[in-house]
Amino acid sequence: MSPDRKIVLIGGSAGGLQAIFMLLADLKDINHIAIIIILHRSQVGEQGLEEIITAKTGIPAKEIEEKEIPVEGWLYVCPPDYHLLFEKDQSFTLDYSEKVNFCRPSIDVSFQSAADVFGSSLICILLSGANSDGTEGLAYVKEKKGITIVQNPEDAEVPFMPLQAIHRNIMDHIFTTTEIRDFIKGLR
Amino acid sequence: MESKLTISDKEIELLLEDMLEIYGYDFTEYSRASLRRRLQRIVINDKLTSFAEFRYRLKNNDAYFSHIVEEISVNVTEMLRDPGFYRTIIEKVIPVLTSYPFIRIWHAGCATGEEVYSMAILLKEAGLLHKSLIYGTDINPAALEKARQGIFPISQLQQYSRNYIAAGGKSDFSDYYTSNYQLVKFDESLARKMVFSTHNLVTDSSFNSFQLIFCRNVMIYFDKKLQDRVLQLFDNSLEHFGFLALGTKESIRFSPIASNYSQLGREKIWRKKT
Image (cartoon, rainbow over all chains, first blue to last red; front, side, top):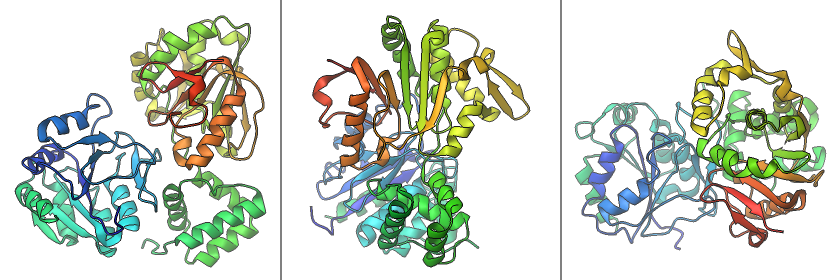
């Protein structure tokens, strides 16, 4: 595993899952990167999100297990009701501490922790949603020289979350899901 | 204005060394990512302006050290969390416990005790509480004090009632508590079968033998070496054919004790073979 490998975190809330399906469609494979998804979702009923993603997109996906180190080619889904953190050796830590922004997992928490570990190799993407989670995290990623991308509010089902980040002016790019897909392809 | 002081990796190690050397609390095998968040939270909440100030207060003030332990330990817990898990406890574990003349259960890292009360309710409904003793331990004495009182915020009760119904509870959940404004107090008859005591999984050893041990969402904060050691401690504390119950994202897979245990279906409950 090269130390400067690219790692992509995608955070989303209401409308985020549809956006994820859109941007993963036609991607075929992600052999050049690891993608990690932090999505606000209900604890019950969506146990098999990773199976659905694989079925719809053909990209191998799995739920995150603690102490696992993400590898290229795989898409990882944060389990509901845990925060996701990163250790210095790049491995995952799951954390059951207080909710942040009324959320667990909180996108802010994961973006901040990932920025400490991956610095400028990190790409964070904030998608559709109805609350302000993710903005603080994105600001920190920018401070640590990572790349920050926000879904175009006109393209987002619920524009509130991307708009919070845009108002803070902490994004490198404002992209539609199609543009995000092209950007990910271009990381090769 | 929020504090902008951030603690470096090296400074975290210094604080951990101080806590070990001065107070005998060993957090050196805890997840650094998690510790970093907890310590950073202390910096913000206590409005600390320099690392030197943080370290000075830690080294010279016992009360401040206790405060740090309380803040570091995650005390988030819930009654009957993961109803599917508790349904398995009711259907597969409790029927086995029935055969014992005296039942001993250990909740390791019980925080404010919600899971201990959950288990007492299930034992009561199975007609076993009178011959049971439930030990609740944690490193955080303040959390244990709350557990002893059995008083919880009413705001959570709706969720707990839903969990109770989903797990297959037999009565009306409200039979077990009396409410008073924003708080509820659980029935004294439940607490009479509980013993709460401080215990540090890192440094303390086995103190009894049990037929059932719970340790949920505690080991996710430990590194692999410490996880293996704690599992060994549980193995030493479990009777033959006893049960070990862990959190949804925890496992004994890849640990040295795994070969002597079999998992109960998909739930994170393992039974000791011999």
